[in-house]
Image (cartoon, rainbow, N blue to C red):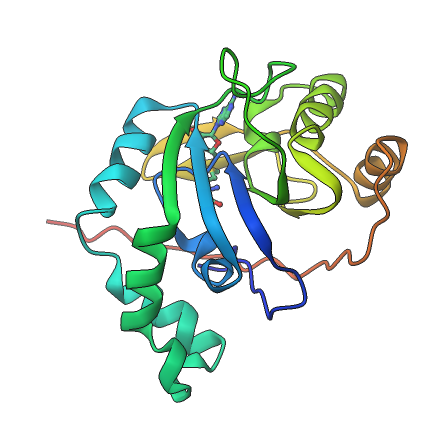
Length: 206
Ligand SMILES: C[S@@+](CC[C@H](N)C(=O)[O-])C[C@H]1O[C@@H](n2cnc3c(N)ncnc32)[C@H](O)[C@@H]1O
């Protein structure tokens, strides 16, 4: 899970909202130690169902993996088992969201949070830069004044696959994202660009 987000305690608070979680919990594993209440969300019903299922089922290997990356499995108080228990308790809601709406949680009004995470969602949801800008404006309304927005995204990509299904992806550049965020009143603390890893997978012949 290259897109998992790592928290070290520099940022903490009462609430964290994740926008466009997909069917997964990997983006919030690291954060659950630092935020008391977590709201996850996605547009797709099946993705939200998968998260709700997880609240009863097993993502332990993924939690172990994230803890290993962070070296946490050497620390007794945050070993993977504890992280899992913590995370299950802290995910309070799994809601429908649509980032193309001015209020992504319409018709619900969600209190803004100290931290909002969105990973690989906006470029998947938006077909052009103007839609992306509006979506980011909507996501920004979920961040409390003084709070942080953590975005994981991909630059210069036009499509991606989930199994054999192809999805479109909006081409983004660093200057595009920086100028939209600055116009929305954000100060950018970190902008890390990591080299993409390319996986070439060979399907077994029968
Ligand atoms: C590439 S996946 C990323 C999932 C996860 N956040 C991750 O990092 O692995 C894109 C996600 O965006 C969601 N999505 C697509 N359009 C959306 C929309 N209009 N509003 C909210 N989520 C949307 C999809 O359902 C999907 O779960």
